[in-house]
Amino acid sequence: MRVPFFSPAPPSSTESSEAGPSTPTPAFTPAASAATAPVVNRFEHMLADETSIQEAQYPTYDEVPGCMRLLDEFLMCYALVPQLRSFYRRGEMSDCTWKFQDFKYCMSLKSSDPEEKRQLWIKRRAEWWAQRRLNRSSEDVWDLRTERLENFPPLAPEDVSSDTTTA
Image (cartoon, rainbow, N blue to C red):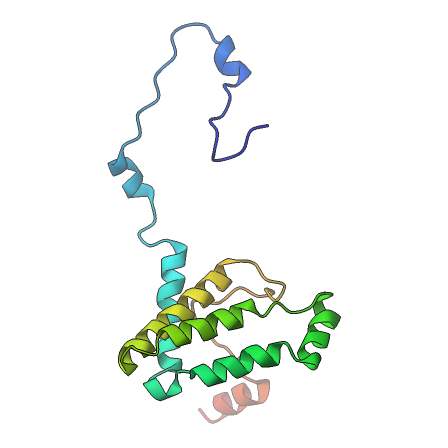
């Protein structure tokens, strides 16, 4: 069985049965692929978007959650009600290891200065959200809109008629 992207494709039967010399395929050139490759890959684009969102959410050091708050969130994750809610919704108990990882990360930042801690926290949260946006989720129903719709929300009929009658 051929695994895509990892093993070369087997030659097709039409290529081997052709008579005459075969034409060599052009060699891979970085210049040719650079012209067709996107300038910024999707993860970097989402990371830049999430970084700007996180910077707006945490404008100062005081908004960055403290280690005690993260420890409380970790312990509350294992409480009875959140575990029952998770079991009801997903059929399994919650895995709270990512909350413990946040707590450990906060503890590792205790010796850094406040602005550096804020920047590192923003980077961590932006990477987490960008990765989450790349992966599919059961909550994915709508695509994120990048451009604003024209004439939205639409004008009500009474608004349109009152504007045209006064003119």
